[in-house]
Image (cartoon, rainbow, N blue to C red; front, top):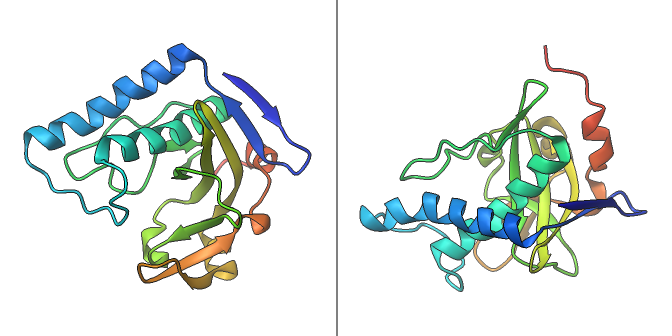
Length: 178
């Protein structure tokens, strides 16, 4: 994976073909048991299937994993990953949020502030095949301080514009939790 920091602090990650195949295998490993057990999706956006949604999310998880040099939490049951930790870094739980495209006005959002269950969240977007952009990160406390309410067409969401996120490089210098 090629990782580059942009002047605005965003981080671009370019996947190799082999890494994209790993993402695809991982997406099937998460998705296929749900199909076999007849688990109904609870996603809001019906324009993509569950496998595609898993694929998008995993690209964000792989990018953050490579950037922070930590593994992805592989535990994932029929109801998903529990919405808490995609990674553990210096004792902090990290949840990645990944959009399937680059929006003109991107936001980090959760349906409610209670859905932000990790210590930290990282906002990403897949902006092309094998190309992920990490916009930045926020602690749960900062999210609650900065949040706005917006309706993107399916109800109110707690959100923060990506311009207010902390730069990814500052996450690397975070003191260990303790």
